Length: 270
Image 1: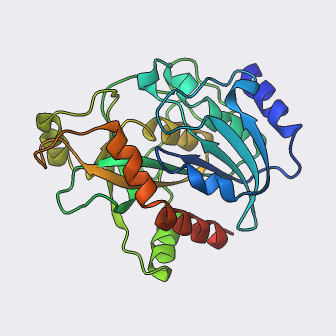
Image 2 (image 1 turned 120 degrees about the horizontal axis):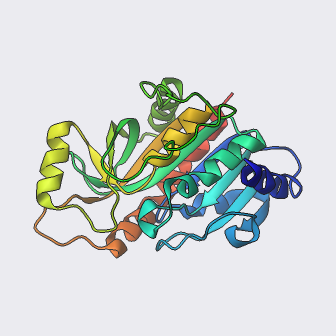
């Protein structure tokens, strides 16, 4: 708790109004943060106890300011279990956001399409998730100031925010998908057999992030909205290899559509 408070105090001393909405931007989706008005920019390396982001396409800095009239805190790049960080480090920024007064968290990612009706460039509102393997961010002693020992995850993705996202997309003339996101630890992409397994379990998209952050956010009592950019079709669906460049490029291709959707969602928040 001392580390969370020290990091929050460092950030809080450098901003004016406290943020109410947190955003975590995934691979290739960083550009939205550049639209913040008069941002305070803090590289992760300057914030006490913050780890470094080593994933390709992640800028590794925190931006705070106003976007669509809302006070926001935005992560340009996140931390992953596959980078070698323990789960409590992966979710460290989420708990710091909560200490700063954030009430809701919008998480984004680039994901592989498991649902064969999806195509690269689709956006999917996450309605639920499947956590496969790896550690768990709540293992260890529970700090009741954050949340209960056994938090409920049945509605961890806030229905009203999902509906707001779908409404915002309709206003923009965009068709967003909805579905279940499966978390795999990575860093290797999944095998065709693993993708067939995930499809059987009910997954629509797969990736290596987001779920630990969502679990921590739900434990802290934050509202959560998750959106995936379908960057590629998962292994075995198309007869071609999957590369990290493909994932990042897909994010770049949809960045304008994606940014417009997030701006409309922020504008609609009460």
